[in-house]
Image 1 (spheres, rainbow, N blue to C red):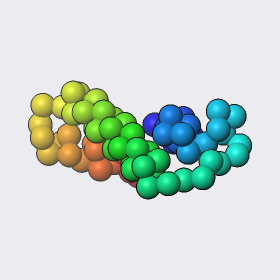
Image 2: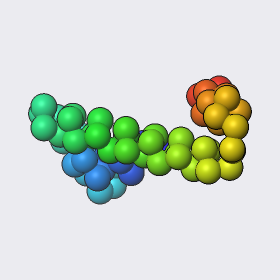
Image 3: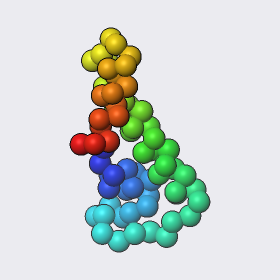
Length: 66
């Protein structure tokens, strides 16, 4: 997940990523939705490689340790 790219997509940063826009409630909510969507997809990809749910859960938790 590229947090800068997500912030740009949510229009929290200008295209060059150096100067922040003024953040309002709508922009912050949109950003949070993009981050959650990216995390769900990453977790789904981890689960695709596991048939054992306990192993999949451990693999997802280990993502935060890397």
